[in-house]
Amino acid sequence: MADPTEFQFDLPPDRHWAPMPLAERIHKTAWAAADGCASLRGAETREAVRVIVIHATAGATTDGAVSVMEEARASFHWIVPGKDEPTHGVHVWATCPERLAAWHVRRSCAHPDICGGANNLNRASLGIEIVNRQDGENPFSSWQLEATADIVRYAAGKYPNLTHVVSHARLDPTRRTDPGPNFPWAEFKAMVLD
Ligand SMILES: [Zn+2]
Image (tube, rainbow, N blue to C red; front, side, top):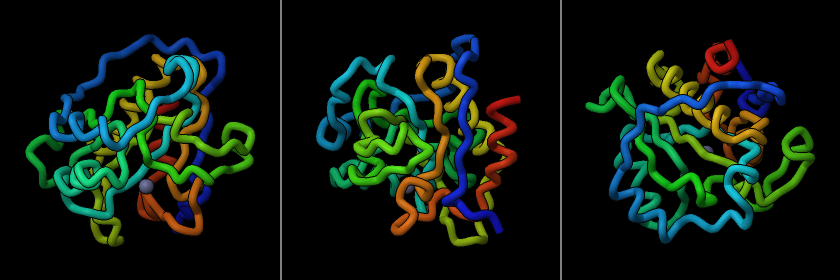
């Protein structure tokens, strides 16, 4: 079984990927909540974004994930809906403005292969939550993988310094396993890079 703390690949540095639109809709509740649970990046967003972090919600619904933003406990930039939700197969939810640093990775977390081992990575990253129970019996759907890869490709076309695509588990291995051992990382990597 795959080890999610190993999930990382890097985007080609001299890529010339055309900007692409993203099939996203603003989640109004989350967007409003973002004011209370996201910070300024401290740098121009176009220059600042170097990392994109893949999470899974360990829950069954978009609303459940949004509730952590309403409670100002955490935040992230997009949610990829779960298989049983009406938006599955249609669009992803934008939940926090990209210009803000969402709170999705602990401040102290760092990895030598990511931004030279720097911490405080929320300022340099975008976060994607994929709705999945993470119970080992709730597979990620093909659409969820494609939708997540589309977000990465969209961001890669928009942010020239975006380099590292990583799991939350890689950044916080003692506390987090998401997106979990059942996330097909190799397949996902191929969707982004091919
Ligand atoms: Zn996470």
